[in-house]
Image (cartoon, rainbow, N blue to C red):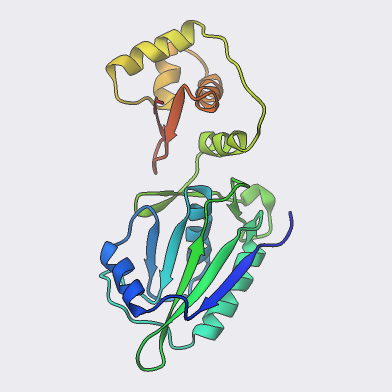
Length: 225
């Protein structure tokens, strides 16, 4: 698996940079955390950014955008780095920054690039069967579905895939010509096929760039690419 590549920077960014980020508000590539006393929440966001298109995590910022900072940033950073190393598989690459505030407080920044080793998982109890992948969707980090994980795995492989355009694919495309999206359950119902077959078919169509997956908290949507 290898070790994570960690870069540490100081005095590379200033308070003006930080304020401009905070002004943007939380979104697809930006998350605020006020404190670091729940490391499992921090590593979940880092995994979600790595599995999506990367992002920046600001620790010491309230949800309303108030810049509070951390009083013991060295200890916080040490604990978080250890948690990242222990509980994320495979390892993720990231960079850290510290932005100085008044009263000897600092904001801790994690920059997480999009990973080439997707999907990454959070494994809190050391049991691989209980590992959870997260994915960034707008301003939330959601659990990745089985289909999304398979798509992420397949995207990093170079082999070309093919599929036979049969009756179920015809029904699928006819449905999508009239509707914005389809779910696995909806596809299984209209095509009268088992859920597992519907899942495999949609995954394959995503990997062949016919469809793309739109992750959701409840059920992923599949749309025409």
